[in-house]
Every structure is written in C-alpha cells, then in structure tokens.
Image (cartoon, rainbow, N blue to C red; front, side):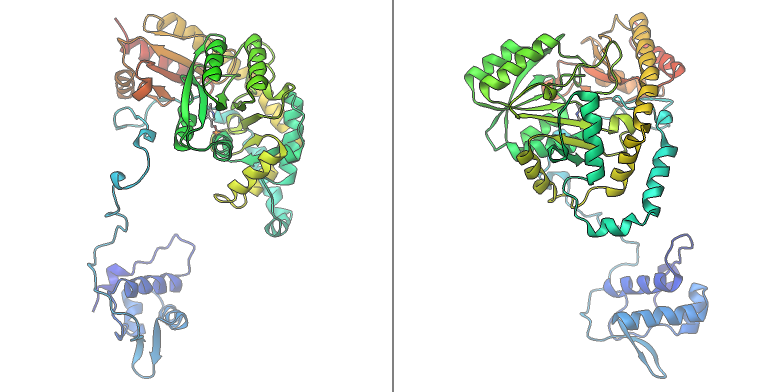
Length: 490
Ligand SMILES: Cc1ncc(COP(=O)(O)O)c(C=O)c1O
C-alpha cells in the first residue's frame, strides 16, 4: 500500500473542507500515476485511521472522486479507480517541485539587462532602507482608504460591476481624476481623454506600444529613467540621447537631432526628472513647445510625482499649454499613496486613448474596479488633497534635512543639488567611490541603498544613485548619512 500517511497531509489552516482536501490529494496521486487505474483505495475505516479523520469524511471524499469520474463504488468490494484512465509511469514519492527543471534564463527571450543590481546578500534585515523616492507609508490615510473600499464592497455595487464593461477605468474615477487633474495641473480634459492604468509605468508602455514601430527614432535625456529606455528598446526604437543639464534637456542639441532624423517620439520628465531630479526651466519649456509644433513630434510627458513641489508652486505641465494634441501626459497616484497602490493614468487625444484601451484589453480585461471606486471617493471627499497638503509639509522638511546633512558630511565624495520637489535626491559619487562598492559596504553596515542606481552598461560613467528621503525620519536620515560618511572617509 502507498504511504498514504505522508502523502495525504491535512492542512488545518486553509479554507478548504477536509473531505475536499483528501479528494484533491487522491486525484493528484492518480494524475501522477502513483495510484494506478483499476487499483482499490484503502477501505474507508482504514483511510480514516490513516488520516485521523471521521470515517464519514473519508466516505465524502471517496464519493467526491466518484462524482468527478475518477473512481467507482463497487458493491461489497470498495472504491476502485476507473480502469479507462491512461496508465502513467509512477514517479518518486518525493514532494515534487514542479518547476525545478524549468528552462534557465538563457533559454528564454528576456533581456538580462533588466536584472537589477542588488548590493551583497542581505544576511540581516537592514536597519535603514533608502528607496527610490517613495512616500512615507505612515502618513498614508489607510483608514479612509479601507473605509471607502469596505463601503464599495458592501453597497451591493459588486454585482452591478460584474455586468458592466469599463473601458479604461471606472467612470467615477475617470470623472474624479479629470476634475483633480484639471484643478491641480491646469489641464482641460474630460473622461474621453483619460485612461486609468496600473501606475505610470504601464501608461508609458501603452503609449509606446501604440505609437512606435521598429526603427522609429526616439529622443530621451541622458541619463534617462532606465525602465522607459527598456520599453523603447523593446519596441525596436533607435534611441538618441540629449544631455540633461541644470535647467533640463539641452534644447539646442535636441533641435540638432530633429534636423538630422525624423524623430517620432520624445520622452521627457520635465517636472522632477528621473534620475537627476532637475526641474526644466520655463524658458526651455517654451522652446520645447515650439519644437514640438515645428517638427510635429509626439511627446510622452512623464509627470510621475507632480504633487510634491516645495520651493514655489509647481510649474504646470507642458500638456496644460496650448498644443496640437501630440503631448501624452502620464502620471501616477503611486507616489501619493505608496508604490503598492497601482493606480496611474494616461492622458491624450480621444483616438489615442481608444487605441490604448484596445491594447490594454490584451493584458488586463478590467482593471481594479473596486480600488478605482475607492480612490474616486477619496478624491471627491477631499481626503486625497488633505493628505497631499499634510505630506508636502513633512517631505519639504525632510528634503531640507537630507540636503543639509549631505552638504555637511558628504560633498567631498559626491555632487548633488537640492531639488525643487519630489521625494529623492540625486547623488553623483566621484569616480574614486564606485557605487557598487559603496552599496556593498553600506549593506554590511545595515544601510540598504535600494534607489535606482546608474553605474552599469551605458551608464557606467554616471556613478549616481537616487536617495529617497521622504520616508525617512530625521534620526534615520542622520544615521544613513553617518554610515555613508564612514564608507567614503578619506
Ligand atoms: C520617472 C518615472 N516614471 C514612471 C515611474 C513608474 O511609476 P509607477 O509606480 O506609477 O508605475 C517611475 C517609478 O518610480 C519613475 O521614476
């Protein structure tokens, strides 16, 4: 007899009735060839003793097998596995790890350059994690989010939602987001101009997927948000780079490229550039808008963290200016509520949004309608704006603290400018402090530098990393800078 004791282990903490668990395990044994067609199952009394359950539970499990067509009850003999099943070669009794023999990375078409650099193995939980520029989770209005989420689940709207088809987001979030974006960013959009996405990342992907053909020319800044680079590369685009300077993209160099090649798309992050945090000056924005008209370019304007600007009021996006409709505006709620809230948006002309909706359906049929409705309520009842105002004060102070600490202790080893907004600093280490070494040494001292780091492949010379300050207390900031100071001590 098979060692049923070790093969049928009941899991008390899962929400599956015991008879169904037993039936499921028996089916798996039949499917793997360990119980062969025509075999008799142990008697119900015996199986009850083996599995330490009531005999009726075993009877229910066996009847479930009969019901599913795996076994039949033979009067006076017991339960027999039906003999018409194909005979499978029995495999070992060791617990199977189904994917242990799966093809390795070399057999899969997926670019290895997408693999991130992680500083040495994390043997202990780090004392401090410096992220890419995420909000402080403790400030996020979770209670309010949960209340709205619960209300939607309760209100009997779920049934209604199941029969609805939402193109590019629930109508209430599209409405509320339009209202919010028109008010805060000077846009003039209506729901047909917006599509809700899972973060800004998906919006960049969708816009690129519907605009770009292999061989199209794309211009980006140098350095550029590497995850956008990767999308353009995957679409087969030819990427041209224009240096990012203290005032933003070098417009003269951009025009030089525009004169030479038929550029299809320009990807820019003018408000708080990633990775450098630079805000593009008003003057360069005007020049850029002129070029967009002159050369009939498409632009993806990535405004992933517009809402936190500290030195003055935020500069309105290019998309809010008078333009011919070729600016695609991309943004996110993830920088307001935390990266796990996958809510962002794509904004553009009606035809573009329609195409993006069709494309989206290939990967996601519905979106997260319940969370979308909860977010719409947070916008409508003013909770989101109150959260932004509260968080802005806190992050502004943390930005000052981080800049002061770094100026006082680290400027012999790195260069940085205090940004006008956003949630990260851009630290460019001098070449004598290679970033991978700094990151490895830091992790050994309990400081995990998890921000986007630019020191590999084409960004070898950059040697820079994003230092998210918004989620760190003053004490954590001080401790983090002290650790870095020790590492780069002369
Ligand atoms: C410049 C830039 N664009 C887009 C994104 C994607 O943001 P989301 O989390 O909303 O997908 C990020 C993420 O940090 C980013 O830095």
